[in-house]
Length: 298
Image 1 (cartoon, one colour):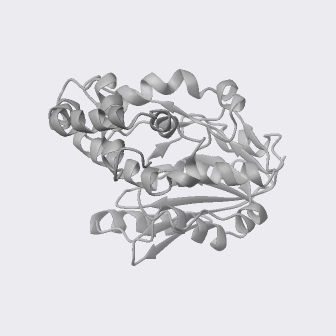
Image 2 (tube, rainbow, N blue to C red):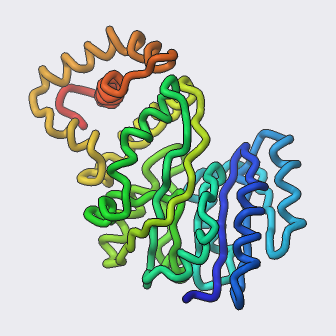
């Protein structure tokens, strides 16, 4: 069993006091555990959220760090690793929840030598919410057994543990300043370095689902990130593989034209009360292809 743990949580315009309290209570019950919980605010603009998170400093072994400028998902995680003091780092997203009373203990007892990923489980939601419908449809493919079949492709940063020395020697790529895919490239980098990832059944709860319009906008931002780093991400993203497989320029041109004509209608449908995953897939493909300069360039 591991006896040192730094729990690291980046936050932006969110309140994570309940999450930190849950983690603190579990850590206090584990005998002989040296731990700390560090929350780093990545330039939040919501003053109320900042003030609410200041309560974190009052909890045992907990620290709340406010950074004035939004540096992005990669930079803030590298910063947290640098601030940590203990051998093992547990990274959690601030909007996750803890459903299991033995969540920390399960990580500490995991047979991981370098990296462990616990996954997530989808909480209750509404079928009118696109993010919920999307995550719920994907949930059967995210069991620990399924993830272990493709350990580097099915890795996410929302809930993973890693040795601090490994994290410092293999940091996140800080070119990723906008939403999306920094975790995919991190998984690829770990594979190239020969680092093993153990996938375990220790999920956090995914209970917060943004409004449809916000999720569509976030998806579009992620697709722009995917396009920017497409050369590095090839072979690690299904949409990119699909787009690469469309070899005929005329087919790409027709798909771009279809997106230009139907994309606004598809977007309104996705933002409305009856989102459809097939429409979502078509919209993503058309949007991504529309980012390319010509019929042959990806």
